Each structure stands twice: as structure tokens, then as C-alpha cells.
Image (cartoon, rainbow, N blue to C red; front, side, top):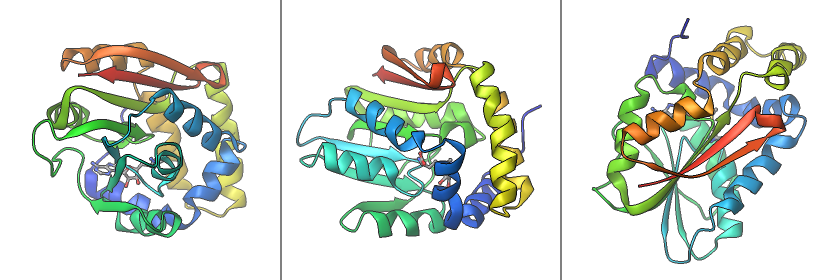
Length: 222
Ligand SMILES: C[S@@+](CC[C@H](N)C(=O)[O-])C[C@H]1O[C@@H](n2cnc3c(N)ncnc32)[C@H](O)[C@@H]1O
């Protein structure tokens, strides 16, 4: 069964967990999440003077890595949670951030050269609307990178044991991290997601698997 992804509820959840979001990510991924983000962003080979939009930017890891790897691009982070954005701004002193909704992007058609989204799409109630918006605002042959939990394999199941342990140690609200696990289990596997992206007009450029496919990325092109 799909978890409740009412946008207001999701925003409240991320507002509440914002202060320990990074710590929990470091713990539950055993420090690997940042390395994975770095590796996948390197795959993008973003050209200088391009506009890159990081959707569901959260606490700003992607924007931080991209501004180091691609200092000559214009990078914009967008998220609907003000509390997550606050942390993003602290971590990216010169970063450009905006509050917004991925299902109603505040950009014109064909305005953005590249869109990234890390661990975001899984949390969006109307996923098809978000994909449609991403396609709309991208330039012709613009790229879209989606990174999240991947195949529902044995390695992925390890998270089901690790997450509750660290959630307890960090004294988080148990509901927040049970949502994470249910959303992971019900999120489409990479091949299904690729079909969804293709149905909106995207073409597959590259698939990238990490932690034996438990974490997976798709690079798509308009
Ligand atoms: C799991 S966090 C990912 C943060 C970051 N990208 C990372 O990789 O660590 C998901 C983020 O998506 C944001 N989010 C969820 N639905 C959204 C929507 N419809 N529009 C904008 N942001 C959204 C949440 O506020 C949260 O910050």
C-alpha cells in the first residue's frame, strides 16, 4: 500500500526532521550517500554557462557538490520545505535557493539546461505531474538526473534493519522513518521508472547503480 504523500504532510515531515536529516543520512547510509551523490553528479558532465536546477534540494548536498564540480554553471536549488532550505543556505553560503513545488515549477518552457533530483521523486504524490513539469522546463536535449532507492533486492532490505536502529538512537519520531521505509518499498524499480520517463518523451542516456543496485540513478534526455 502507498504511504500518504499529501504534500502538506510531506512538507511538515521534512520541516520536522530538517535538523537531524543530514546526521540520519550519514548514519543509515554508513557515510556512502555523499560519495554516491558526488559520483553520479560527475556522470552528468555539465557544461560551463548552463543553468542547472536541483529539485527537492533538501539540505543542499547536490548544490554543494555541483558548485564545486561545475563552478561556471548557474545552480539553483528548489524545495518546498522552508526548514530544509534554511540548512541548505547555511551549507551553501553563495548558493541560489527558492521555495517552490515540483508539480508547478516557476520557470518558463525550455528555460533549464539540466535538472537533478536526489531522493525527491519518491516523496511526490503526483509523480506524473512532476515529470511533466521537468520535461516542460528543460531545453531541447536538456538532461534530467534522478537518484533514489533502486532495486528492491537483498541489499536494499538491509536498510529495513538499519533505519529503525539509528532512528531510535537519534530519538526521532518513529513515524518519520517508517514512512521512509514504506516509500522505499513502494517506489517503482529503475526499469519501471525509465518506462514512465520515456512515456513523457524522455530518452535514456545512462543507468547507474550503487550499493549493488539498492541505490540507482537514471540520466534521461529530452
Ligand atoms: C529525502 S529529501 C532529499 C533531499 C536532498 N535532495 C538529498 O538528496 O539529500 C526530499 C526533499 O523533497 C522535498 N519535496 C518533497 N516533495 C516536494 C515537492 N512537491 N516540491 C518541492 N519539494 C518537495 C522535501 O521537502 C525534502 O526536502
